[in-house]
Image (cartoon, rainbow, N blue to C red; front, side):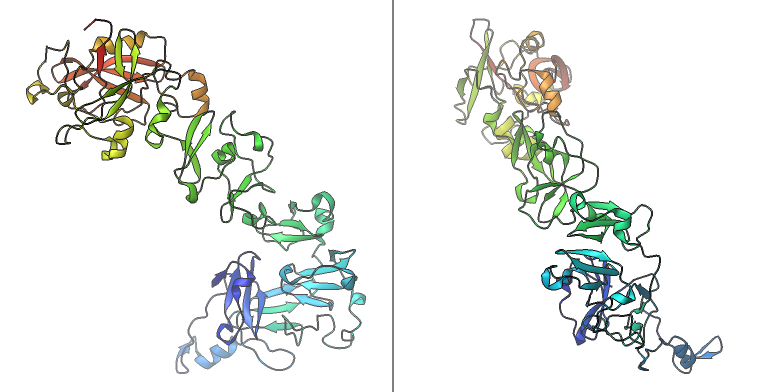
Length: 530
């Protein structure tokens, strides 16, 4: 069974397509190519390729192959011409009165105007009649007296069905194709949709209604869309966006049904604060919008992956799966992390020419960025994920021995000369003591860099002012999701060295194994303490 998205994709029904069966997605119908026209049929589990016929010499339960073949023959039409059918699938068309025209679907229905007033047509995809009245097509249940005057008389065997053959070549009340059988009969249980769902007019226009009692029995999903005065059967998966048509990429539109998405935060854009149904966004086609897209009122798609958007000054990045996620520090320009209200100093490392911001806190001048010195042979320290771009944002990570520039002897022994140790720092600067890192645990100002420590907007709003002292602490701890930061101190013991630790809400001094790789900040005295 082939599939086409729309009737336009079917193309011509020619000799090469004769007998082909296709499922048309946007019409939710099955059609087969018959005598130059695509005809609708109802597909069931029985509609599958027939088994290979046995040869005339084979036996099957005592019957010859020719007898078995004869028993599966298709009934003939009233004209006497037999047309074989590979499967006996019957679609009961409620076509009991000749109409002015017979259409396979609403796609071929012309506008209802004065020239069509009073005319009625039979639409196969609706399995019902429509009548043109007051410039609107409306559902219609005709009687035999309503048949067009030009149709055959009631004594004619063809009376009671359409005499047009543009889609259905009907020489009797039953037609056959190579894959389906149609019969025309009056189904007295077929209910008028307007009696069940109400008039398709006024407030109902553009709405989707559910036939919960399953009375109408036309839509497989029992869902109907009100369009131009007619209740149209729709698929459940298409019902929410039926009639939307196409739009510019990034266009948002509330669906006709469905549950509204939950707001990501109280600080979201208010454009969708009063929605009652799910909201869709046009992304080359209509799809359900992610809650973060609604929050920003901005689509996240394959076309803008990596783009930044801000909510309450918090940066979010468009990622895969159409979701805006809180940006990590490696996705932001380094300038974004600094406090614009702090007066920073400048340190130029003469060894490699790199420039760092510095900040004075108490009697000390601290580097406000992590050290990024790779050594003479560029073999010292490492970048996060081994990506040099990450070093440009958050510096390099060093083992304690690399930071202190000590031999492997001190991997397991205590190094005592720690008061004024330059280590890997530039000339005139040194590695801090653990006691100097401990000053931050007692400080009232927040050192955490803005926008890099929180998992959602509401947490951010509860933290208060970020990076008040300008220290610009970035979460670089190994093996974490960017919510901790560690920095080496000279203070050590066998196998371990102390480090300054920072987390949301607190800072403290702890210790790491000397072979761990963490960040380095250098310090120098400006008050005569060294």
